[in-house]
Image (cartoon, rainbow, N blue to C red):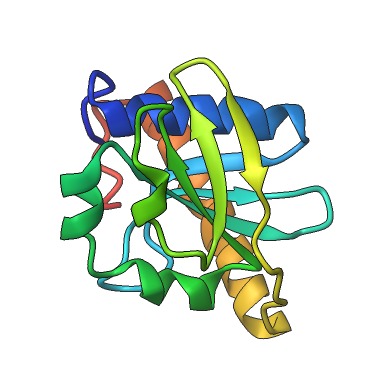
Length: 147
């Protein structure tokens, strides 16, 4: 996992804290499909799946060429940035969250779409397994889980 001292990790933490208050469970650096790694995925109380892409600055955003691939793996897609980020460069596609390491605020909700049932089931299953494996590795860090 990336160093928590990075701006992107601080943004992800603040967003995850905010989403937890909304009864969403989140995982950082989740792989919904081979070749894709989202900064944050979150599952809500009604099984809604949100993907949040955290951007620490203009260069980070300009270098990101994969974000459109994430749209097929969520009901709602959000950009999360800090208060200094030039939000005018972000596409209107997706919601907007402003965050720091401690909290966040949703400024714009995206147009919601609904995942098909088979993909939702697969993602929720993978989310649960990944979360359990991460928890297990914290409890027993010396055991090679092959994950």
